[in-house]
Length: 221
Image (spheres, rainbow, N blue to C red):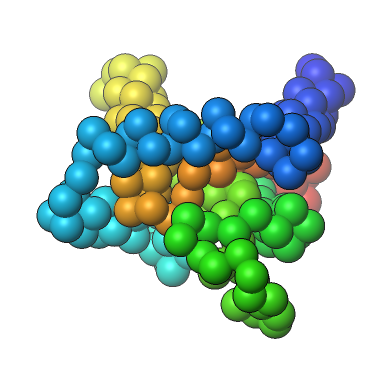
């Protein structure tokens, strides 16, 4: 099973990389622009963009990292079992990997965000704010959407139908991923395939790191 997860994770990374390469060297860029223009043309106005920016904050670096660190503190201080401690620890490692892959990919592909002047040469830390592919917001929210339902099941009282809680939480969180991704396009911070690449990056990281769960349990135990 671990081997299947690793293969799946690398496959998702390969798809993400392939999309990035295609955007630079094939006609896929025209499709990307067309889809983005279609969405923006149907959802216009300063209010829509303002709301999109507000919703996007929920998947920002600051919001996601603070939320995850608070969850980890809660689990360890409260004295959760080995399973939940291992899961939240693995979610932290997965998010770290995701951030690194997103940063390296943005720098490598150097696809500028909508509205950025292509004739200007950018250097230093600003490249992460100016380059678009893949979307960090979509990648981060994907990682959280995968692992957070396990934490929610840990919090709910015994006797509750935890399987129902898991399914409901998963549904809500994956809807959150979709809404955040859409908002990044509406806010004109990303093109459509940027957020697709972000989701692929997040899932790739999840499946690559998941085989480490037994090892983390052993270390904690």
